[in-house]
Image 1 (cartoon, rainbow, N blue to C red):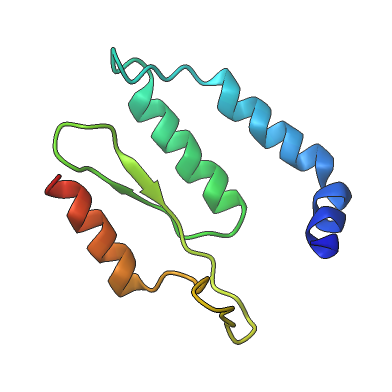
Image 2: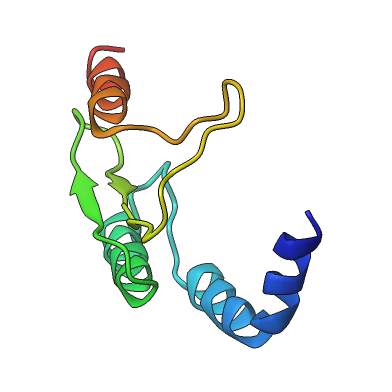
Length: 99
């Protein structure tokens, strides 16, 4: 955890700027106000972080944004806390479509 906190502290200004952009974007699920714009903003921010984001439209609900950042290092798992693979993330999205 120490490394996580050190990383956060080293790039605090960038994180605050990103959070400020997100909370400045109106998005009201009950009325639909700003939902599309917010999903596009999340895509843009993920791209700035080096991710490959996608917007998933599931039924009549709000879009779901997912993103992938590939590591240059070999992925490691700790017990059950493994990163999602494309297969099980697709399965999770499909289960949302049918719920």
